[in-house]
Every structure is written in C-alpha cells, then in structure tokens.
Length: 97
Image (cartoon, rainbow, N blue to C red; front, side, top):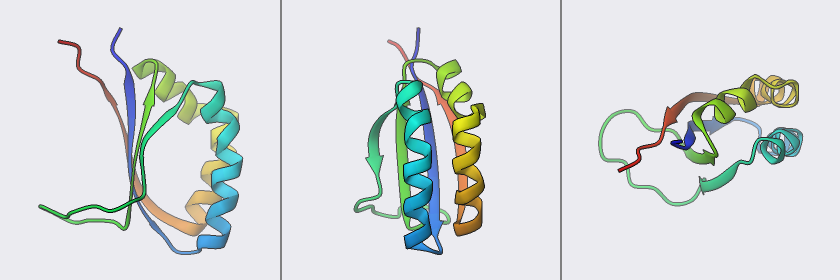
C-alpha cells in the first residue's frame, strides 16, 4: 500500500501562537503515524509563488493522512493555525515502483 504525504506551505503571522498549533497537533500526528520529512528549514525557490515554511509529513497510507486531517485532534489544531498562519495543504499518495 502506498504511503500518504501531507505537503504544506505556510506563512506564519504569529510565531508564538504557532507553537500552540504545533503542540495541539502533536497527538493527531502521533495517533496516525506521522513522520516529518521536512519541517521548515532552508529552501530554494525555483518557480511560482512561495511561502516561508514548507512541511512534508509521511503517513503509513493516503487514508491515514486524510484521517489525521479530519480527526478531532487535528481540527482543534487547525483552528489555531488558521488564526495565526496562511497555508496551502494537500495530501498526495506516494509512488511505489
């Protein structure tokens, strides 16, 4: 079964409150087997619009990634994030050769 990935591009407007988002989201990530592959860090803009923070999170499956997003735990975190940051997020299915 292919893995699932969250890809998020984020501009944080309030770094202190963003910490609340991170801590509130942690139980959902733990419950659904999330593994952070990229979380902020240096980036090189190549094409198109960019945001300051880029995150890639691996899940055991596409469904686990979607279920994490829709979980009550993550929805509580999402409410905080939407107050303090602007973001685009997608879930993509991984490729198995």
